[in-house]
Image (cartoon, rainbow, N blue to C red; front, side):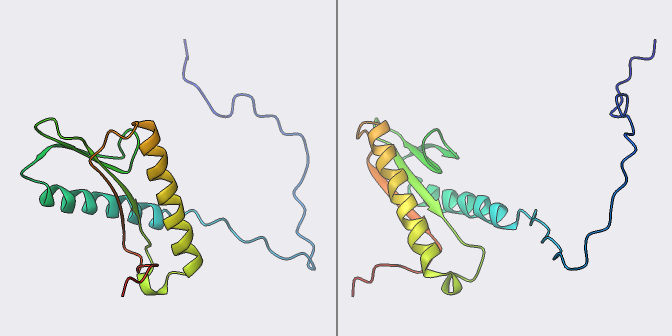
Length: 140
């Protein structure tokens, strides 16, 4: 009658013993399993969605974070086309973010917005890229 599952039911000791690592072999670096950067990115998306909701509050019907096609999707009242937002962030001090990261994030965001434009067949009112990186294009 004992129907409880056990992780060890099929365990069989094959008699092999672990050997110590040779002294001349370097210790393998432990994989970083912290989710600080990902968590910061999600937090940044939520804050950006709140800020954009406040900006469009008089026209807003609903907001989706991690929407069907974009990080943030703002759906507007009165038949107005939605706004799609691509959000990128760094958990480091923005001015200390490597320029290669900034360029890569910006390029990825632009590619995503172009893909969204193609997916929704141009039926949007705005495409927005929002980040906490320093601007990579200086207009002055």
